[in-house]
Length: 295
Image (cartoon, rainbow, N blue to C red):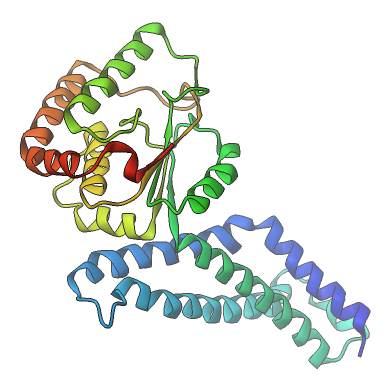
């Protein structure tokens, strides 16, 4: 057995995964997560639990195994046949390696990649991260926020711009004041004891994400959708927490904030309160704020 040649093929394939990380890792994880959201939440919400196991939990292992099998086959076949089209097959054929050793190197690397993807999917199947796409949120905070989310067994973690220690960078005084007052107004109506109703930087548990998808037909849009999501999860007695964050004014694109959006948000909050005031007041009367909020 030519272990040196075997290792060379194996590590060359693993290095190719590192160079094409989006295609090799991110794309399969995203596609599997979308399958989970569609089939596990949208369809699964209409299927009753069997012996205490939800349909979403039932299909997750099958989707993980399906992804591992398809990625193993596709990665191995791609790694074996692609050198033929790049004219690098001659280097492999000229090496002192048997057909078995060549196939073992490619298949071993493909199996390792698939196991890595499977582990990532197992992790991401337990929670989902929502971030602003304008680069306003700091992705370096994410590992610490995920640890906080998991350690406190939360269903929703809001990265709040108005907790002590939080920072808002490059916003005008006018924009800061408007956002602060809007969140105070939302809190006075909706009673969910968090300080930031309108930040789109959040982490949802699988249970919370299923509830959001289940209620997606009646959830609004823009900033109202963020507030309504908080209300829905709070009424459903899910664990909600918040943590400080650093928010930087958008680095890409332009703000959509205008008078029409402000008026729509104002009347949308009033409409949300009128429609759900009974449920909101019953939750507030039944329990004090800190019982499902982790400070």
